[in-house]
View 1 (cartoon, helix red, strand yellow):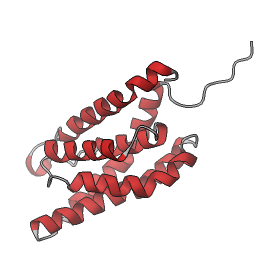
View 2 (cartoon, rainbow, N blue to C red; view 1 turned 90 degrees about the vertical axis):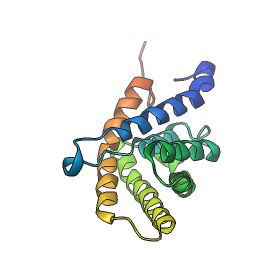
View 3 (cartoon, rainbow, N blue to C red; view 1 turned 60 degrees about the vertical axis):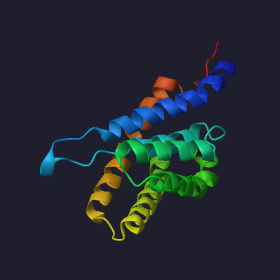
Length: 170
């Protein structure tokens, strides 16, 4: 994705992938006690776009994705948005150096990002409900989100052709 046209469609593309990620996060694996925590794909996508299109991932866009996630997933409105903004602000200095690193380094940097997002949202939800929600479920969902990051990152980088351009010798 290089050139002028790519720059024009970047923000709609970020919003579209964010919406698709939020919808995918709503899909349940199983029902009742047998259901499994599904990854929060919006967290993955915010970090992905922070790395690969940092100029477009401004605070209002991060807030909009977080608020949309809160509203669609039934979370406390604003808790995810504020968690995204805090994590986005904390991780922004790292994004310049990580952009061209191997996926393993980006994945390791995603760990503190996802931990901060889930921790802040857990605390804010607890404050709103006047009691902390069960931490085990939050920890399981944060872990599944962390584990899925390389798959989503590699897939998006190949579909969007983001990354190093191979040298051609003509």
